[in-house]
Image (cartoon, rainbow, N blue to C red; front, side):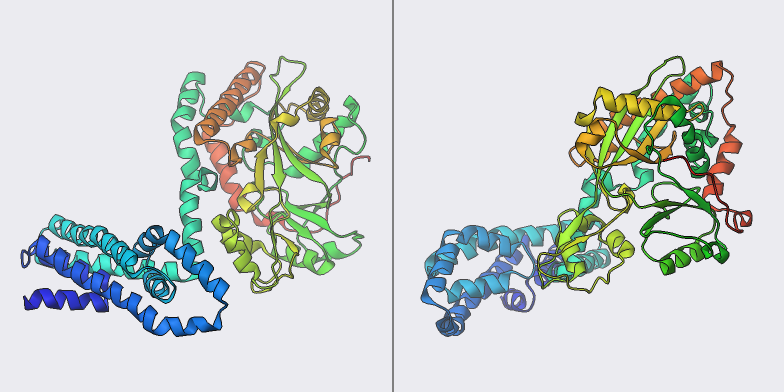
Length: 524
């Protein structure tokens, strides 16, 4: 009798730890499951009723500071939602005490809430005790059972602390969403299921690197290590094929020595990006000469400078088989730049954590932000979180295939023919409006080869199955175009050459340092 009473009183100190301890005792056969559950249930239900009565005796006097109408509305709501509120608070750490105390303070039915408390306790208590006993039995002996109980207790305490703290709670939600929403998976996880299909394509076409011949005019076919300035220089030839003047954004190729600052006459903002890079790494919008100098000092290789163009940004994935006179658009992606709206109270960090999507990559936004995370934006102020159209840096990608028109396809086809032996890849463009874009009026920011993706797959509405269907189709076409180019005389890279090129992207050599080099600018 005394041990059972001790268990009941122990729930007043900590319900969770007492239930876990009882589960361990059940594993050790020091107490029966039935007696242990009943002792815990008696203590938990008694504690719940004491909280309710404390609200009646202590909380009721405080209600006189509130209007009768507000008390009445709160009482009516809690009475109507009683079962849901009680069960939710019973299974959510940190809510039970406040909820049960409030139920006693407001004008609620003692008999009804006593029933709710009892029913919730009947569900909760055997669940926790049984789980602790099951885990303890699974691990076999007293010592391991105690270790399991301790681990469960530690996990419970940790979860309680996480759920009680706003920032930790939101970061946990963001972490869980990154697991569920495939668009936030790391690259290795997203591409692992593609590996068997790539192996099949390599065997079928008798070459694991055949895709590097998809674009014979670009190093590695555009998988990695290609020079953006070399591609842009080739695109200047687009004018010969009738592309409208101004379709290619002028650029300059710079090096990292500080003397590059001398003689530069710039109208800020400008965009700087590595001449060799991928997935938006190193791309920055520069708004002052000081930012420019800081960027160049931190660079490890050649960089491309372009003016910053306002307007809508799209990614247009295109391919053309070498024997065809005209290509086709495979995918169109609208790139949106997320923002948060200030409320005059929350910091920028809190606004990001509150946002349903931004919370998934809150660390990315914090790292890239030029504004302090502790700054409090004014009420109604829109704070743009990113300026670069890269998904891995936080932009939102949306499927815009519905924007495809014959005029757009003709303009893209002409632009692509401006590059010698380019057949497969994605244009990143900006345009003043959707109407202009559909009419084929856009400015080319850069062109990516076989390493590019049909990025509309990152639209949150695109299923994982559909995304892999698109990726499988994309890589099949890349191998097929590579095979046709091989028959025309193009030679794929060897595996060793490709591996050296990929390693060179992450480790540029010291020869990339030096003075400034001007590249002829295309006519406007």
